[in-house]
Image 1 (tube, helix red, strand yellow):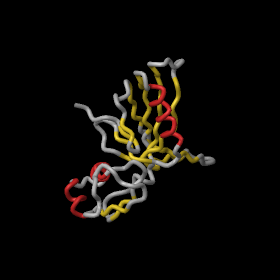
Image 2: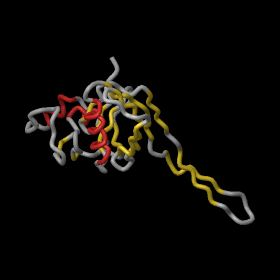
Image 3: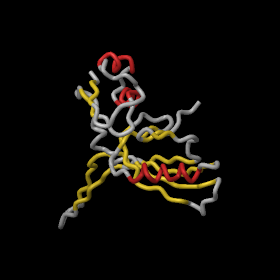
Image 4: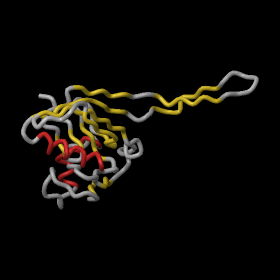
Length: 171
């Protein structure tokens, strides 16, 4: 069974019908007078995730409203998409693709990786939680067993509910 797409604690009931992950390199070009241009690879760019989905049922308008609210939060959060290790991302766009009906909404969405928050791991001993993060998300980010995190953080009562700004010991 394929894992469900998740972002900041919101789980998509059905994964999007299309999902595209784009990764590109950053290249800088310097023009030199009387000489060849200098081209340099300056690193890998942020991943861009886009796709299309449908919401169906009597509550589809309400669920689309929830996605709009989620997108309006300008802070990054953990994005989990099928077959990919979760990572921090910004929810940068959502739009209707057709006239909504009471029982079906077709939409497109975009996320962009938060490369600064992506520099976590390795030597870091503590993690500050973002909105909607769970101990499961943190275990994926740091490639640490959930049992290890539970043992390191005996004050955490529920692995699926953390308050934003909580300090979690990771090693």
